[in-house]
Image (cartoon, rainbow, N blue to C red; front, side, top):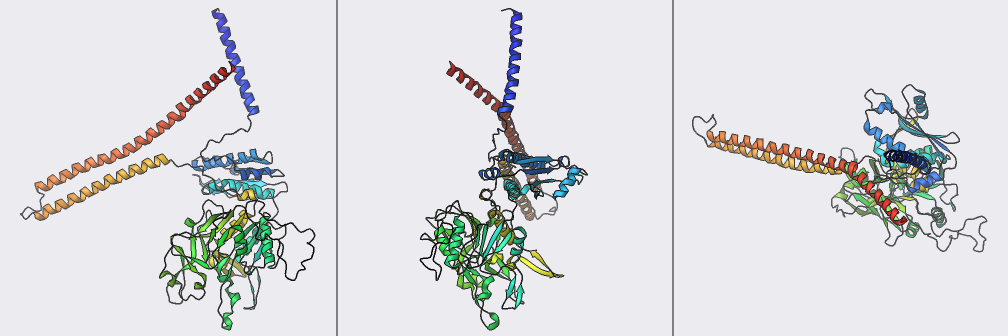
Length: 631
């Protein structure tokens, strides 16, 4: 073969390889559209199954408008990194929604129409840039009927709930009707008439807040069925509930209904119903339990015991001129005893409870109790009747002996449930046994149709105004000043349970920011060595000063004001030792920097050199294997 022929063959081969490359790129763009591989350790960009189920259930298109001030955040790298995470998560949502989500990414430049649009949606600008320009970082959504929902600003400290917040906004837009909450309460939480004071009563603040967000429908205490259009049951203080009502609650939960249930071993808010102090009687707090249902579900509630806590005990006013007294039965749970990974309790700082009970799961229970609120390890249980006529709450701390156990005060119930009425619906009093079933009545559910969606709270007083909000009247208006997060906890629970089962199942996710754990470990080790060396230097300094003092005290000559040769030698020895130890300190810092640099170099070699080599070797091995099989 001549040289010219070789050149032509080489040129033809290059052209052929170029055509093959172009064809491969075009084929990849056509056949591999939407293909993504999430290689992050915590699967940050992998949408959870609950979110996928929610996105697949969207019936009509939803428009999403993602506003981020790109130019104004040029000098804020941490915010830009999180903004990229938000945009990529939204793109994953769009991909999973199969055409039912339309995403627009908008940079609201100052004094532009886009900025006016962000303001119209109600987004909340902040000022973080060097020039104090308004920064927008939020999301607005609209549905086919023109309803809107927004996330005013994506807070970086709530990054672990990013997926939940986005899914909640989409759920609200795809289900625009207000959630119907059925309130079944053994205490009067709404406006009414108090026969003892002969005055009208105001609704509890928690009821007022709930009505601003939901349709709250008050249910009669003697109901026999819970209507199908009720999305969520809010059951408060179910004292002496008859069997027909208990059966209605049982069937509502088993057919997939969600419930927020408050029971109490000693509800002080209901004490007025047991006696009239004006007539010489004593108010006795009442208790409530759902023992029949709890037993069938595998839940045990301490209806006769109150949890006392030495760490979270609140101080109360003991009387005029007396100092406040710590009451271990009135406890203020702090964030350390709340589930930081649950959307109901995440971000809350304090929740006050009064004479609270605790929950446990039966040994053979199929359900799981996921704690939301727990006591501290310095807690114990006390018989409920101890608190009924307790003159000095501080006396409970005199012989306080903590058990070392943390008690579950509020929890989610997860898992399958069984009916408390395996023999069928209970007969109503005076009912004819031979009577025909009510036409159109639903068949009995013996087991839950899906995993349970319940939240149990062992206290009713948590809802009362006195434990979390101070009410004042100003020009005929009621002004509320909160001092605890009780209301936030209840509203979060109602909001979470009112969503779909898929939405409720979304837990917190790992954050985008990853700490340099290896580097932090190196820094801690170097810091420990640095401090040890520094302490040794200080100890030698103290020892030298002591020796100098002893030498000076031992002198009685006339030249005692001048340093002796021994003192000068001791000082010079210390100065030499000080220089040596300082060299050691610098060496510790240099070793730290050298270790960090070596770690960085190693990572660069692995990422830039070793990984491509391994991929190349793997590709060649696959080609060789294919040729061997073909041959």
